[in-house]
Amino acid sequence: MIFLGCAAAIWIAGIKLSDTTDVLSERLNLGSALGGVILLAIATNLPEIAITASAALAHQPDVAVGNILGGIAIQTVVLVVLDAAGVRPRKPLTYLAASLTLLLEGALVVALLLVVVMSTQLPSSLIALRLTPGAVLIAVLWGVGLLLLRRAGRGLPWHEGGDAPDNQDKPQGHSKTTKEKQATSKGISTGRAGIFFSIAAAGILVAGVLIERSGEELFGRLGMSGVLFGATVLAAATALPELSTGLTSTRLGDYQLAISDIFGGNAFLPVLFLLATILSGQAVLPLAHRTDIYLTALGALLTVVYMIGLVFRPQRQYARMGADSITVLVLYVLGITGLAFIVG
Image (tube, rainbow, N blue to C red; front, top):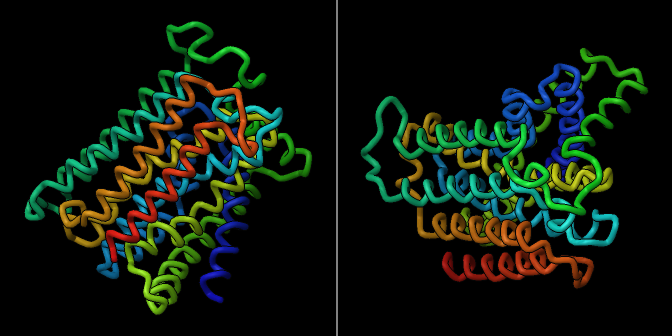
């Protein structure tokens, strides 16, 4: 009951947090600024932040690592749901959202995951001041990637600024402006939006800690390993806000933002290895198991499939999904099946 209650709290508070983040971003003119991107990344990943911090302080790095890397894979699968349920007109999500900026975001995710794999091979004794080279490099690379994406957002030296023809009618991010106008019409002031943001953030942080502790106990009694639990059940629970906000974006016709939010959240998740390292005082990445490296590769593979979809822009649908979404779904099921065999 605690686990299910916390999952419901994350869903509800996540929706409110996302909406108020968009309102504050528009009101404070942070929409295209680096601060707005960082605020959005932190806000949408508060469940993962809470779980990572809780697991690190409890000296359970396997749950933290499994949640981070499993979260990347399951959040990519959220795009499958958005493709099947949220796209109007009936065309594949990648066809309507195709742009070079999204390709760059996907490339940043893959690059960060490659650094994760490299960092797992470093000696665990390579740590000073609670910092390790791998975790620091991931954070620095993420920051550099954000600067490049901000530059790309101003326009690229390609035809139509890198946007494919016949994609979404309105520019990326127009749904945020719509949310701000709706909040204004309801008389929600900036201060009130800030209060809602703080309450929702606090609720998610508390629910994130409780869902990790209760879920680990529950599924541990059912015989599920910490790695498999963190990569599937826990990662799925913490991906609920992304699912809800993604459906909102696609319903408003902001398909590029829906994919950008997923890729952006996935790029931020590896940065949490720095938080886990600082809180635990251990070199978390060098202690990674083969299952962690396996999940890293799975997340990168799923991201590459959608990057290919953004290039080829499939128009045909099968079961209301594009060929790329079907491929991602099949690969994810096969990947989790393989993970179950690995952990025994």
